[in-house]
Structure formats: structure tokens, C-alpha cells
Length: 259
Image (cartoon, rainbow, N blue to C red; front, side, top):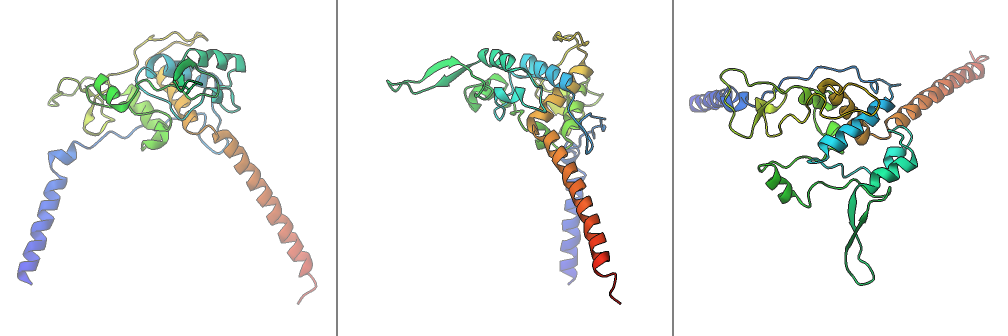
């Protein structure tokens, strides 16, 4: 029994030492601040202007490295999204080239993208993506706000959180300091710079503004049915409330003469 107790204490000491070791501490990340997004809450909706600006940020900045493989061009015109016109969607799609086929000869061929097509991947395969980014593969952004703990708040904090490494933190070449990443180190350089793009509506392209806009767009990409789902939920609650009221008064009437 004594030996068993000593072994248990030793194992506990090893576990505690492991939890307090630098390797575990390096996994800590700053918690993102909660943002007041327009789509929050049971009646929240997407800001259509922000969605359009966010698409511009994705297209001109993010798309060179990150795919959006689960989104079709025609989704850009659907209700609850950026709501581009059909003509605008056709023009956007035509800027991309997709591989199609086989033709009658069995050969694959390239053609301008159509609204039915999905967004074109920036790299032909994962190995090409890693080779172009120092071994790190840029994640697809279709579901990024749902795939990361903290969702939209985390992505916004990450985009705006780049800074100089504090004293005592060593950064090897190819890594950048961001306190919202586990260990504070990230392989992606800050993608947003002041006025890196020019918004068509004249909105100042600050880092904060571009971050908020692209996060709103990526949240929509991950949950394009968000507004419809909320409307349905509200209608269901109204229906259940009325139904419960009718049932209550019906039962009172039925049992009114019973003693």
C-alpha cells in the first residue's frame, strides 16, 4: 500500500510538472473580446453593406491564399447574403477560370466560371499550398468562424491582434507575434494594412473596418441560412405560445363542471 501511495504521488507530481512546463504555457492564447455584431441575438441580421465590403476584402486580400470551397458564386445573390444582382454575380464569376469536361474527345478544358460554380481554390493541391507558404497550409475559410473556438470574435481579434513581440519572446524567421494564437506565434503575416484596398462606397479602409467587414462576410459564408433560421424560430415560438394558450383555455372549459 505504501509503494502504491508513493507511485500515485510521483505520478501526480509528474502531471503537475507537465502542466506547469513551458510547453504547456506556450499553448496559452489571449481570450478575444466579445463584439457587438449586428447578427447577434435572436433577431440579429447581417449588415448588407458590410457583407459587400467583406466580400471585397476576401476577394482582394484573402483569396490569394485561402479558399472558399463551400460557397457558390450564385450564393452571393441569395436573400440574407450580400444580395448582389444576377448580372453582378455573372460578372464576378466570369473573372475566374475553372476546369471542366471531359469534352467529346475525352479531354478536360478550361472555361470562365458560371454562377453555379464554387469559388476557385487558390492552389491546385495541398502540397502546392504548403510549398508557397513555407510549409503551412492556409485553411479554407468557408466554415472558419464555426471551426474556431470564439467564432467571429476570435477571427476579428486575430486579424487586429498583430503586434511586436514582447521582451523575452523569441521569434524565428517566418513567424509573427499575435497573442490570440496559441503560443503567440503565427506563420501568416498580418494580411491587412491601412488603405490596402479602396472601398467602392467610400468607407475608410482601416484595419478595424476591414477586419469587421470580412468577419461579417465569413460568418455569412459559414451560416448563409442564419436569418431564415432565426425567422423560422420566432414563428415557431409564436405558434407554440398561441397553441399553449388555446390548450390551456380548452382544458379549463372542459373541466369547468368537474368537481
